[in-house]
Amino acid sequence: MSLEGVMRVSGSALAAHTTWLDTVASNLANSEVVSGSAGDVYRSRQPIFATMTKPFGDPKGAVGVTVEGVVEMGPPGRKEYAPNHTLADGDGYIYHSNVNTVEEMANMIAASRSYQNSVEAMNTAKQLLVQTLSLGR
Amino acid sequence: MSAQFGSILGKQAQGLYFHAQRAELLAANIANAETPGYRARDVDFRSALRTASADRMVQSHDQHMPSNSRFNTNVFYREPAQASINSNTVDMPKEQTAYAENALRYQVNLRFLDGKIKGLMLALRGD
Image (tube, rainbow over all chains, first blue to last red; front, top):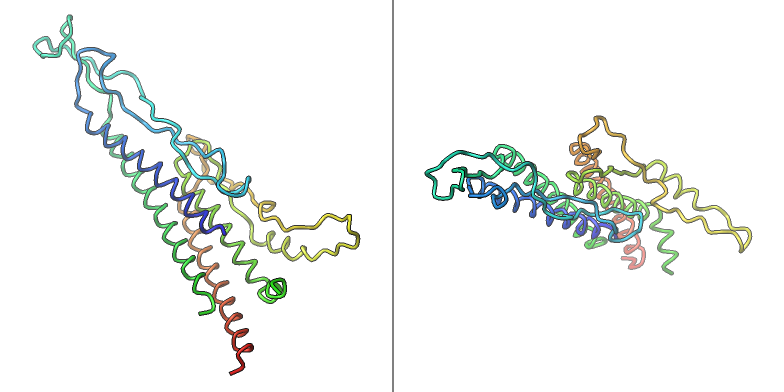
């Protein structure tokens, strides 16, 4: 029965979008982090979504979504001349994270909307299953 | 015996199966709304019904292949109204409407099936 398939597919989306929300939270939390070297500074992390290679049921059937990995994105952050900073390097520079907070807020809205959509799909499927179980009563 | 019940329940049971399958496809579209390169899929009810009706094809020879009405033969890719930057063709409002409509149709089938089963029960009990 494929209403259970809806549960599995939507469940995979919930997991994937939770990962997305996780990375958003991590990026926002670390947006003000500075470091003494360009290599060590926090860089914005983004999940890479991919369609599952294997469907749950039928080989040509519906496929869920998975997080292929989380990658550090973009160019290194801003370099600032602050010779009095405790973390400043030999030349007096500190390095900021490259998190774009506005972008992250937009991502957060997109992630939570996607999550809600999948929850709604699951709820509807659940109602249909319950109604099917009470057939003929 | 089960085959007889199958023919009594007939189209409604097939319809139930069809709408459950379609729900899964549409749920996959909703799940993959943010996946780069994902192409939205749907299935056409009219052609699926036609395949299901054409299923009655007679096998006049035992070497003939059975004409199964495979649901997947009627799956097609949606044409996006607007191209997106990551070549994902999921149109969320469209998917949500289709999903809600499909759930409603499932319930309609369920109601008809329920009526049939209740009628059968009445006939069996005879009171």
